[in-house]
Amino acid sequence: MTRQGTRRTKQQVVAEFRHAEILDAARRVFAARGFEGASVDDIARRARVAKGTVYLYYPSKRALYRAALRRGLESLVRELRRRVYAAHTLRDKIRAFMTTKIDYFEQHGDFFRIYCAEAGRAGCRPADLERDLEAFSREQLALLQDALALPGAGGRPGRPRPAAAFALADMTHGVVTRRLFGRSRAETRRDVAFLLEMAEKGLAAR
Image 1 (cartoon, rainbow, N blue to C red):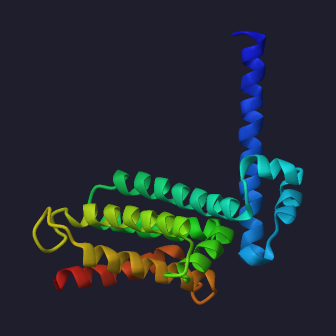
Image 2 (image 1 turned 90 degrees about the vertical axis):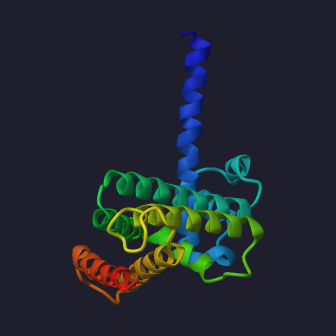
Image 3 (image 1 turned 135 degrees about the horizontal axis):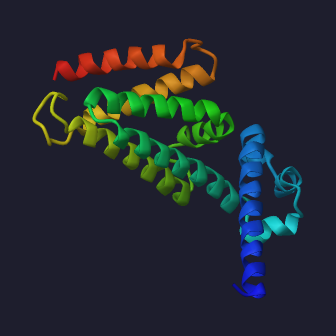
């Protein structure tokens, strides 16, 4: 490898690290102050970079906000896919989905606050954020519909179950919200067991 090639690789590593630091700082600042209350100066200080460095990566505060939200959504989807696909039975797939989503948001509470702020603005979000959130919704519903197409899910195997998938996603989100706002102090496994019981009763009734 040439010395120039080595130097270029090091520069790429530094750039990627700085990029990640900026997004992490943005997520924390937006979570604490909201979009309107946050400034690029705040984010630059938190990331310990010059304000101009932030603008090298993102042309505006809105672009940075979208990137911070999108990064969290993509990370969550990757983890959901990994754990749901690793499970084999319907019950285990649903449990994996619920546990992963609860754990992820509890480990990334700052991201959850941004997500909740945007999820609560349905119909009045910028088009780019609307697309990102809709894509996330489609991803998680597709995972659940694949699980519900397994034998034992009620109905005919292989048949799409969009209403059931939506209900499971909504139930899980409700528990996440209750936990992160201090309305539930139960262990994760207890809340998941309750959700599973409710889900199985609902599926059996169809």
